[in-house]
Image 1 (cartoon, rainbow, N blue to C red):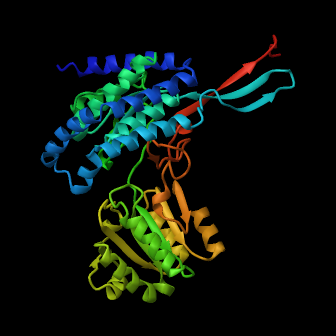
Image 2 (tube, rainbow, N blue to C red; image 1 turned 135 degrees about the vertical axis):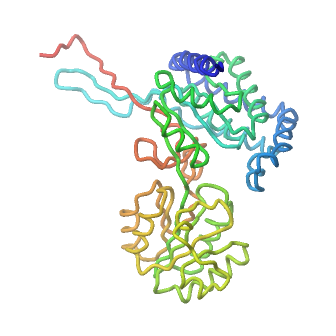
Image 3 (cartoon, rainbow, N blue to C red; image 1 turned 60 degrees about the vertical axis):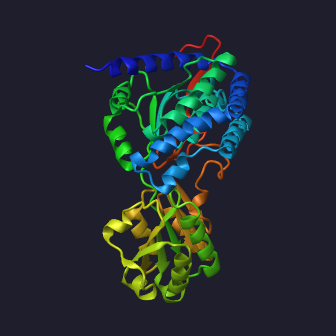
Length: 419
């Protein structure tokens, strides 16, 4: 029998103890840790880049495409950006201890709701080493202990970053196990950790659909999920065509491999004949493969015939599904059937249509005349994010500091007893 159960016990017991200690840590102490972590990152750029090179050398063996390799790559400039992000998290208001509701009962009892950490977070994420820093900084700033499990493709990079985070914890007097990294690629460890619902308060998986489905099925604690990013752009009959083309280009082409990139374009029947050739020219110039309905193919001869599976697919590539719909109602019905409830956009000059779209479309973020790419913690003013939730409970959309907290009721009395 392997010792992965013992390993999971050790990590979770250490995390639980650290989470109790973090409950009484001051905001100033957390700030010092964030600043010291940023300093250490910049002092050890060469060491981190060397570790990252080991991951990049192994990348072909994992079958990573060009976009995945780009996400994996760390350079001095990117490390500076990561260090800057720590400063940005430091500048955000500390949510812990915030009293956001207070009332005095007729008997004189003062009842308050106080924001508190979730406790212990188990965070599983893809091969993006910058996420190691983002997740650790957000969890600790919000008073949570975190167990990090990054993708196997970024193991050496993650270990190098984690060692600096831990050094900063020790130097600033914070519990050294407030941030821990799973330093093995064995899948069995994830399974063992998912059983520890008595010690882990929430699991957050960020990666492919198979990973998230596995976590949702095996976890014995709440899971904040982020399923596919099948994001839609709907061009209404009153839309400004130039605006629509600019938003489509940004939504699809700026970074096609991210979750808030557009995957499907819907066009109102009334403007399709005029608008589709413009779409075809734009997408041809940007190297985007089109998979469309029959009417789309008549206007864009290079387009392939879209199947039902295409409308259900998050491509994460320069591929776009296109469909002409009868009207706004048909667009909403298509989105309801195929969306992953991540991000949807309407481009329109009709306020009534915009209001109906935002009311009826049930996704984490709904945009009017703006790119899908704005569904992001930084763009929404949250600072860094730990992920984008497609769930409906307290954390929905970009998850920043407040989404990593819960609350407790605190009541102050003067000897009151209940009659």
